[in-house]
Image (tube, rainbow, N blue to C red; front, side, top):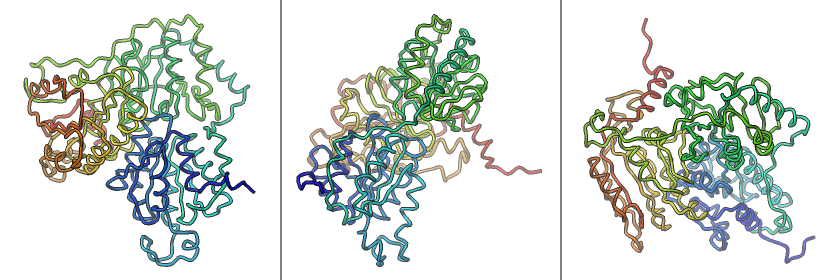
Length: 582
């Protein structure tokens, strides 16, 4: 039996594990089945209770936090039923996009779960496991701490799965388990990812095959980096391969900022038929594509318009490698990439000297802007914002016009791009910006957190502006006021009223939501023209961002980035919104 000095509350054990994994912020909403645990959270020296306006926003915030604090995980606390179901959309998005989050649900005691009284927050029919079953659909691992003897091992198991699989996990924490005591001895052994074991003979064969294909391809070799390189923590290994090989490199939309976009061998974003012609020609004309962490969703591939033959592709993933048509399970890129770099680095390869057209976003000639010389258009806005960005900025773009526009703009050194391209839940960015800004502060980024969000999207999750100000965060929020859901207008229902919204008084929001004791009062602006926005961006006090700032950009309701218009056209044909009549 453990010495009394070695004993620790189960709740404290869980918090220590989170702290060891680099979690310094816990998101969520208090509820009657998690209040006891919250006492431990509030008293913990290294973990801050953020406290959100609702559970969905809290899940979004945990997602944004994990994306920016890439060597840690997000953490979310909700209460039984009403809280956890509100959060489940945010957790599903993190599962879809492979973002590591632990969702802790405070639930009734073990005896109540066995005896099934008609408690509040239940369905009234005795099914205490209904929410647990629902949570399992969006978790790579799950557990209910019903047995004290296995509590610590279960905590360690799900957290190990979380950091290994880069996906959410779910932990059900009964009220009476929180203050039960267990041995603290396991805490002496840090948790580490548990990638698949690789057979040395298979790995050697894979390396030989890739090297042979690289040599055969001559100068027509490119590297394509995607989302999973970020999610599974191989940005450094991928960069080592990119830099030492000298091969031309491109990124998919979900892989944006995985590669320094000022690198002279970086050519930009490849998104199938929506790509810039130079990028499309280089990638699709390659004899060999070394694909790192690909995720081939519709919006990530230009509605599946990739023109990359499987016979010309080597796919490197977290748990397998695919060389042309052959699959090698268990050969993951975390271990393989350094060895591949060592193989390719000594080669004097012709692809290392192939010209790569630079990735640039140039301001249009005023005469070429179809909306007029001084109207804020997407054609002008995004190149101009590219001039505003600084090293180590965190740029968050909402699904729709913002995400398509930001893709075309190169980011400066060590900037981080945050967007939800696969799940695409509108309103996600506002909560995500809260988490991203906290993470940026915790890891010491010197840049700003900058959010681009549409007026329609912002209305879904606007409450977290108050949380940001309460926590002393100072993002710059650009609200694209285009009178509704512009991306939906281009998908279907161009003039339908269901794509309209009520036009809020946006510049009054921060005044209403700001805490009374805020040190630096927030500022809000409305700009109608290019010259007004240009002047604001040049103001040193604005760019320095001493406090939260909101900028309302007045834009044409039908204007959109060219890539979005093309994507909407492709999606509209696929979705078949209009019946075919014979």
